[in-house]
Image (tube, rainbow, N blue to C red; front, top):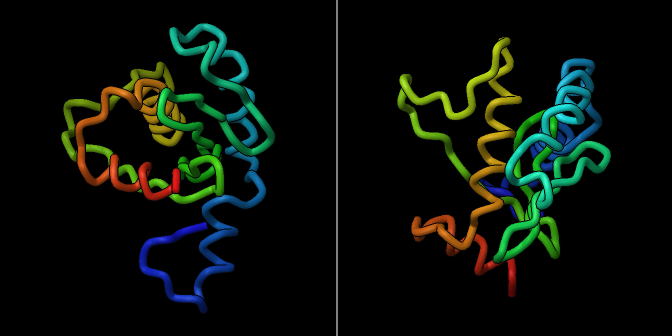
Length: 132
């Protein structure tokens, strides 16, 4: 798994924090997603699998960790860095309760399901590199 920064001494911690077992809050998030995902327009592209929401895009398949909202790409679980916009007014997906991580996961899922529309060269380079 590729990781930005690359310092080996922090790899185990980073992997555990970013893709490890789910916390109690993340388990609740998973339960919420079980109810929400089937109602989404992209439901046919999404599957809940263990700690991940798997999203099938046109370019590749992605796994969004339900604890960290970090993204891995098929086929080799390469890390995909997607940084949300810093606009306060646009929170992405509106939820009637507070869980910014759930909103982030849903926003990333919608974005990744439409990956053939990507124009950002940084994201496209990461996807291309993972496909090699």
